[in-house]
Length: 160
Image (cartoon, rainbow, N blue to C red; front, side, top):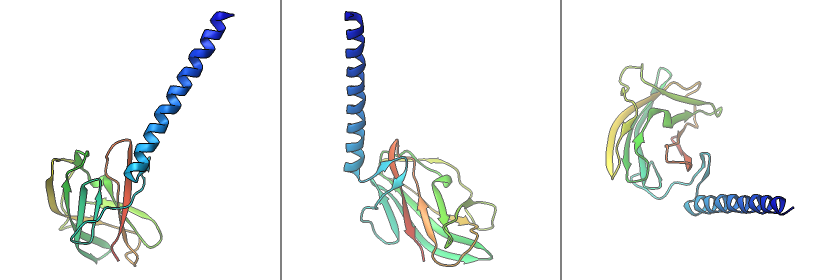
């Protein structure tokens, strides 16, 4: 009987520790203004606009244009966050029908780049990134989801 009681006590204690860890992680996520699993986040103030700042990882966008079904823009990153890299797969263009499109690098004038390691306030760019969305009609939104750990974010920047 005492062995059964000890096992029950051990299971209750393990459950309490697990609930405590979940509570701590939830509190940290709420304190940062983001949620688990890449939930929508609010950008901090940044300039010059248009830009996004997620936990001191900043993305600036300029020279947005479209021709022949390709949307081009220049992006520059500054990373003073816990993130360690920029990656083309972190960016998507969301069209008027809410359909996301990944970056393309096969169109002329588009930068060929892959995951790039940088941090400690370093800058990357400007890079000319391109998308081939189903529609180039407004609104067009740039969705950025940098890899910043278990609790982080994605943010949207309306381009037009």
